[in-house]
Amino acid sequence: METCKNYINGEWVLSATGRTRDIICPSNGEIVGITTESSSADAEAAIGAAKEAFYGAGEWRRMGAAERAEYLLKIAAEIKASAADLAKTDTLDNGKPLREAEGDVDDAAACFTYYAGLATKPQGGTYDVGDGFGPMHSYTVHEPVGVCAQITPWNYPLLMSVWKLAPALAAGNCVVFKPSENAPLSTVKLFEIFDKVGLPRGTANLVLGTGPEVGAVMAESRDVDMITFTGSTKTGQTIAKAAAGNLKKVGLELGGKSPNVVFADCDLEGAVEWAMIGIFFNAGQVCSAGSRLIIEESIRDRFVSRLAERANALTIGPGMDNPDMGAIITEAQMEKILGYIESGKEQGATLVCGGERYTEGECAKGFFIRPTIFDNCSSDMKIVREEIFGPVLTVQTFKTEEEAIAMANDTPYGLAGAVCTKDGARALRVVKEIRAGITWVNCCQPTYNEAPWGGYKMSGIGRELGTHGLEEYQEVKQINIALETGPLGWYEN
Ligand code: NAI
Ligand code: MG
Image 1 (cartoon, protein in one colour):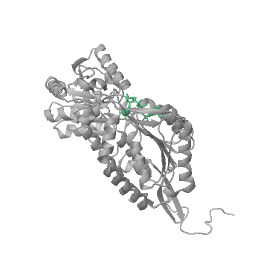
Image 2: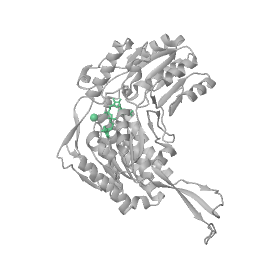
Image 3: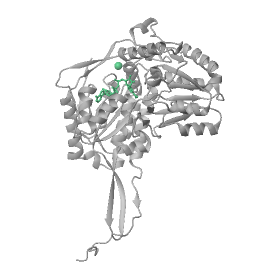
Image 4: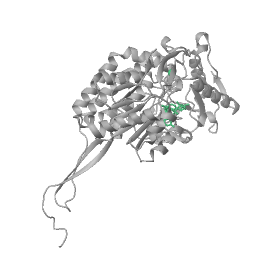
């Protein structure tokens, strides 16, 4: 197996550490790849290359937007051309069902296409300013921020990379990128595509390694103008502190504990299915997972038993077999989830289904957890308060709309929230009260390249995707042009 290398200044290079990392398939524990394991020196080399490319050569930022867009369209086409390989790579690396990985690849190509289009659209404004200083033309231009460092998690390996790289490149930045050490392989392939389409040297740099060794340098470096990160709230806080040294721009997409509020007047079968998608999609390893079911008391028994019936019927297995639900990313992550399940039992929640590792047949070699539902949960329980990042749903009940809203907002997080009801006015009232950046009515989880993605409260800072996602990677400059030259007569002498 060939060792995957860093991509720095347009060259594929092994880290001088000589260390490597085995990349493990969580479906069976087998090695599916090997990567070079970088040190801080590699991170610094990549930052240096991006800095030189941006401030020195400046080819990418000076290029016309239409030409940059051409590159992004070529990247989208190459992603499509190697879609099958990319999907298989994410399935082996991450454990997700193949059809979910195929969906991620489609979204990744569409994201590059979207930002290719956006790069060439009108930006900035002109302002009708006062004439105290004489006639003036005032307008704004959007410029790239500079050197952007980007760090991603393992739950959507290719797609999270693309959500960051596409807008940053569209805006004309140069980038240093670190994927999660748990699932880096599809990002390596994405950089092979960058190499193939011939992005100018140093425009996009890849460093493979861990957070403490490589990520920390990216967050701290004074040569980095912006850091964007998706992952846990705890690591997000560490990054924000490190970023304070040179007050680099920060974009954080962090954890969640999102409520799914279901009223008695919902379409029951529809709401059950969305609740399942909310918590069992990607085995619950989704920042926006609808992990807290908040349900009107009168339908609780019917709803929860139907949900459990369907959860128990989900097929579990290796991603390549296209089961309903795949593996958990690592053994450590699986143990962490099992620990939460134990704490739920200890704190008195009622286990309705699942609650254990799944070890049928070949799955004994992998890291699988049965779809798990806890009823009779209360807001002081650890399983209700903390992001579990696994297929574990908590159920709480309410009698009034006010109670439901209070319960939904009783969390330090504010990434997402859903409401199911056939009462349109109520849906709008509840959605308006939910303190979260992404909300759904009578559905849960759909995401679009066109719409901004990000959280309130401790779920993050800033937005990805859509026009907001492009603007995150831009500085706005105001330009004021005096329309008359010559003395203004401001001073008497
Ligand atoms: P993490 O947030 O520590 O890791 C995500 C990325 O940050 C990885 O690329 C990692 O190498 C990097 N990183 C770690 N420490 C860093 C540091 N000090 N400076 C810079 N970069 C650093 O998440 P991890 O360890 O993979 O998972 C732990 C928990 O985080 C999960 O159990 C889950 O609850 C949560 N999580 C949440 C995600 C979300 O999207 N909300 C995504 C992944 C994990
Ligand atoms: Mg892996």
